Image 1 (cartoon, rainbow, N blue to C red):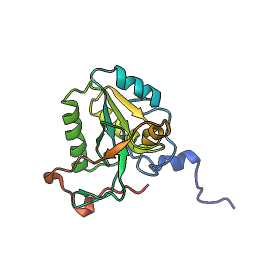
Image 2: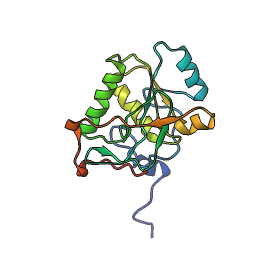
Image 3: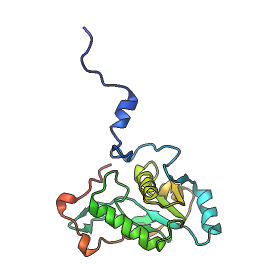
Image 4: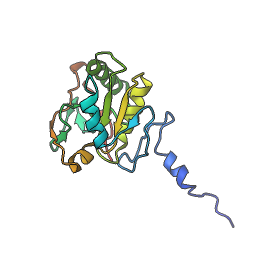
Length: 187
């Protein structure tokens, strides 16, 4: 007798980690692809060159998630990121509710001064889909010069580059979210 149910192929199981819109929604800490939709993948050396040659300098956008409650980020340990970075936690989640979408869009508009041609380098940690999602989302909003630094802070540290203590950009009072709206940052 043949089985009625089969586990399916590896591809079928992988597809379970993506939304209908193509964002990664599960197992955020796992091997990432070579390319990011809407962005150019860069390594440490390419980032250093971009920082020294691009005028104006690219915006460094850290999307490392952090737990939060009642509109307050709850850091259990200090985050260190690349000098000059803007830290917008949780915007790389695969599914953003309206409030998190507004938080991301508002701050992208602010840090680029409305210039959708401004170079933006998005990162998190190595093997993290959060930065991949954030690049894809920013591209869908019309941002054109997006770079995905997939090695993130891990690669920067391994290259013996300086990291600095970071603080997340706070949620504006009007956006303080209910505990039930808290994104799941489980990895």
